[in-house]
Length: 117
Picture 1 (cartoon, rainbow, N blue to C red):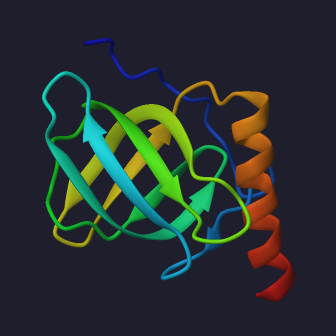
Picture 2: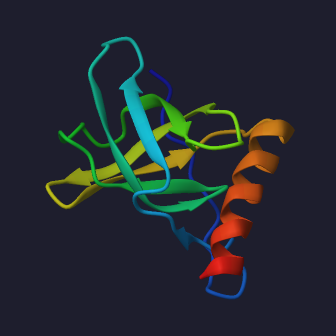
């Protein structure tokens, strides 16, 4: 398993906006090589990662694949990443190297929630 890359330190001014998307976007997170999985509604989403309320806790620093399910006119997307932390309150994933198409799709969906607040 590859180690999780360190992201540069950000501030509120330099950080990509996160948007609240609960009950509109869901996810399925599967650990690389083990088949262990969790899923549930996405609470916050940005091109850098997500926070989700999931049905089980997965170990931190585990490499994973995430399927984001938008349930509308945008297709589901898959992205690799790492579990940053997980507890009974939620699970955070740091995304790894988004393709231009995946980045565009995530930016489109987050823009909708920024516009509709």
